[in-house]
Image (cartoon, rainbow, N blue to C red; front, side, top):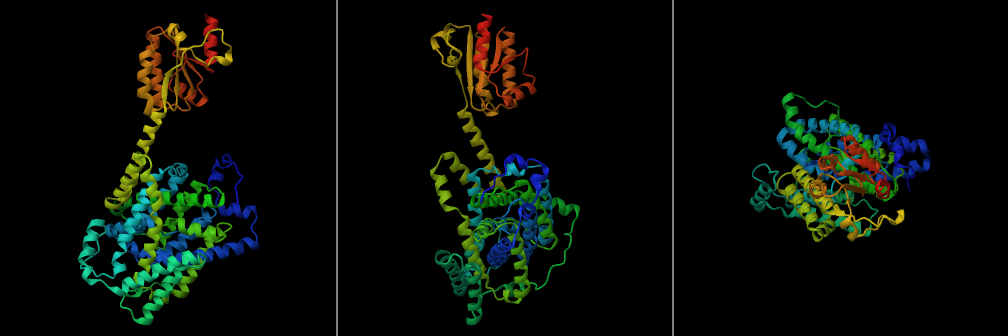
Length: 563
């Protein structure tokens, strides 16, 4: 499958926000497509059922809140989104943030933060920020994903080992590990056996029967074994009393000015992580199918989905990489598959709610261990460490801050370091060099071949700028230009190889022009492309301060004509 629509077609508002569902239906949708989408939707629902409950429990809330997010948020993502194959629902990346929010503000605060994050996502979409959010440096993505994986793994140790803690389990990693060490005397071998068996079944299924729904089979077998042998392990029923067998009643989260102020940072964190995760997932789907998603339309749908999830008591919703990839591999044709995945999940919840009470907590912990292991991107992590030092520093900074301090600080600091690294590399790529003049009788096509000896005797000096002329390079280039602005009667600045110039670069050229004018030096800017010339003129850089010529040959021809 491939998309032949040019990028320009989606520059308008309608193109940017038209749901892919509308596009698919408009292009023609038949019974064969519905059949393929139904099979894919059922496949994804089987994977999402245990995973949604496990993520919710790991986040510190009841399992039904994860199902509500997958059902109601998932259908809105597929119905309104800008990706044909995106599957929305609760994601492992949110476990850390959601758990911390619940601890600080309670479930009501979580629902309010989720709804507000939806408003933030919608605002980001309408401001067309989706195109830019995708530009997160790769080391940052790998670093915070690996950090989240490490935190998820640590959060499941209690249920993996069947420990009983003296108090509430801390959310910070080091205090958590200390509390777990103190609880080691309560180790339950049965819990570890159940968790280990769950992991073994999933791993074996993925290796020898990849089309079989290993997650659901592993959890079901764990529940059967626990009941049949009377294993002394905690279950969903013993901890939460099971899950409801009916639909939730929509309700607006409790709002007060004080609570609104308190949850705003959490809402912003939800929105930022949700935007990154959903656009990353949509990009993965594009790579698998050759299609192209609409980033701002996807963000708008994610915003609506988070508001919808909060209204029915669900946790945060985002695009999920693993479930989206499963959807593609299962043969989905379009967004109907994601909508049917939510319908199937709803049916499972209504029909099998009493059975969910028998699921061992250790089995769900085993599921999340597999998820965390898959999230870690171990090969990418190792490759980045072996690569350039700067990328490794960004990776480790993001990873360590995510694990030991805070997820958002990890992302922000990693992004800032990545940006500084990019600026440094761009500044190294930019340069300025003397461009000696050719013999005056050279034909025009030879006017870019320079003779250093002739340049030393000429009253004209030519300097060529290569690379982006921006704030990262302006000080260096400006210092060079200032030194030579009064050395000749005519100074030609060749910008043919400068693809970009920002306001700092324009200010630098303006300063050089004023210095040249004070010293009676004529300044000519040659070869500036329309964007660079427009930036200069927007900052008042033009005649009589400088003269523009289309290229260096035109500038030299003009000088020849004037003698």
